[in-house]
Image (cartoon, rainbow, N blue to C red):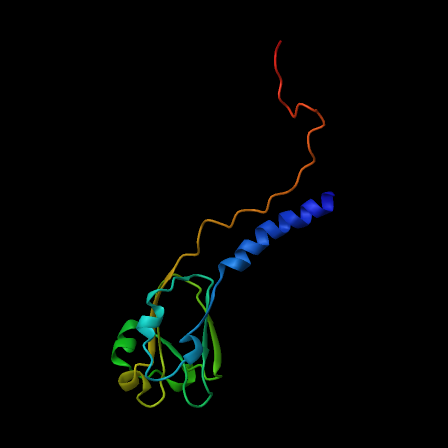
Length: 149
């Protein structure tokens, strides 16, 4: 019985941490592409430290650059060696704050809106409730209630 409680106790700490991270496929079914409203896509989402962004696209057609706010606004092309180019790029959101991503292929950022800006919040401080551990019923038939006569 003690080993079962130990396993439950371990799971109570491990599972909430795993469950708290969210995986976001940028653009949902459309993926990372041109002529998509990433501002509208991100508007109703809450991004937290530990979450992951999945940029899915056909390799060679697009890429992903993590940039600063000025580069984002101006769609300035960073050095090519800084691009993510696999078509299945994953970015783990490691620190809170404003984050910016652009496509550096041709004029995809400037003329086709292939850019994403999000705000990342601290990870939720309230862990999920721990699972209840069943206990044996009290041996007293009064279940711990006493009375006086």
